[in-house]
Length: 201
Image 1 (tube, rainbow, N blue to C red):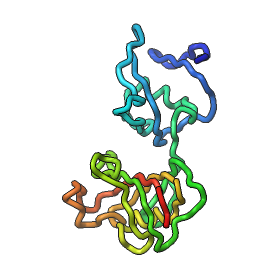
Image 2 (image 1 turned 180 degrees about the vertical axis):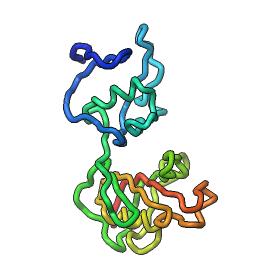
Image 3 (image 1 turned 60 degrees about the horizontal axis):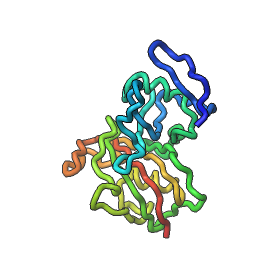
């Protein structure tokens, strides 16, 4: 690959770049591939492209990764990083950030919708369940008729086939005052679900 000349950054940090373009922003949620190497000899330490690993999700500007990497990511082109859209207000207490747009076929009330989903506590983004975990399968439900929690239902009704989005909701639109102890969800916890619409029937 033809890297440009090394660019000067803050003390102790340099960057080689292949592309230029739109920069990421503080607070953006970014999914990326990464390879970590020792500078001396470029010995590889880890890579998200290994079969056992996935792309890495980080929140910019909140200390979620080491400061040197954090700085460099602020200047990455979306060619190398998958950047979510700014949150869209779906309803009172529910927002959506689009990761991958769909193809235009919208979810409709009463439709049978099959999704891949990862559920997280909004605070700390701690995962409590995923259809992508070993032994789990895609989840199917009827949209807009109350078969799932309100925030999930309301968010799904704004999505289209092939779309991958992150739906966040306040506790009242999740499991409310009862929480969901079996999944480690405390009372009134805000929830975030990463949903991908696989089929609509």
